[in-house]
Length: 321
Ligand code: A3D
Image (tube, rainbow, N blue to C red):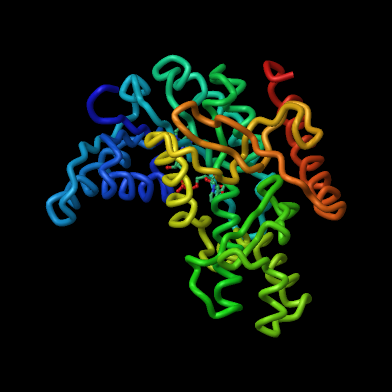
C-alpha cells in the first residue's frame, strides 16, 4: 500500500487483541481484527480505537467477520484457532487448528496474496507449514513466530540469574517450538561474553544453566499452568510485532523464526526454527550456523518431532499429502 500499511490480524483473541494494541501504539498502519466470533472483533476494535486519544496514536482499527475486509493487507498475523489448556501439549491442538489453517489459508489466498504472513497458531511448526500449503503463497512470504519468544524467555531467565540487564543478553533458541526446542548456549552471550564464561565469572554452576535451559523449554507450559485458562499472549504478541516491523521497515534483522528450510541444516523442505534474515523480501535468507555435535543431535530430535506432525497433518487432510 502506498499510504498507510494495512495489518490484518486473523484471530482476535488474547494474542490478536494484544497485537492490535501494540501495532496501533507503534502506528504501524491501519488494523483489521478478523475473527469467526461475531461482535467480538468489532467490540475490541471500538475499545482499542478509544485508546487513540489517550495514547495519541493515529490508526484506524476495525473488526470484521468477513475475509473481504482483509483485502490488500501488507502484513497478516494469524492466531486463529484454540490455545492449550493445562495438561495439553501443543500437539493436542493439531486436528482442530489444521482445519482453521485451511480456512485462513484460503482467505489469504483470495484476498491478500501479496502479504507477508506470520503464523502464531500452535503446534507452530506444523501449522505454519500447513498455512503455506493452503494459501499457496511463496515460502519466503510465510513464516512462523516462535524463536523470538523462546529466545526472549531464555534471555529473561538468564538476566534474572546473573542479575544483569535483559538488554545485554543475546539468547539463541533453534529447532521446533515444543519441548524439544534447542536453546543454543554457544551463541548465547551477555553483551558479547559467552554465557558459559559469564557463568564462571559470576559463580553460576553449569547445572544451574542447564536448569534454565530446561525452564526455557517448558516456558510456555509454565504460563499455561499458572493462567489456568489459556496461554501466554503479551510476549508472543510483542515477538510477532518485531518480525512485522523487520518486514515493513526492510530492517534485515536476523531473528530466530520458523522458516522454510530446504538444503541447509541437512533439512529437506520443512518449517523449523532457524536464524532468518527478515527484510522487504520477507524471509530473505536462512543463516546456517556451526553447531556442536550435541546441538546437532538435539536439533535432529526436534526436527524429527516436527516431521512427525507433518505426517499427521497429511493423514488428516488428503490435499496436503
Ligand atoms: P484465543 O484467545 O483463544 O484466540 C484465538 C481466536 O481464534 C479466538 O478468538 C477464536 O474465536 C478465533 N478463531 C477460531 N477459529 C477461527 C477461524 N476459523 N477463523 C478465525 N478465527 C478463529 O487464543 P490466543 O490468542 O491466546 O492464542 C492463539 C494461538 O496462538 C493458539 O493456537 C496458541 O496455542 C498459539 N500460541 C502460540 C505461541 C507461540 O509461541 C507459537 C505462543 C502462545 C500461543
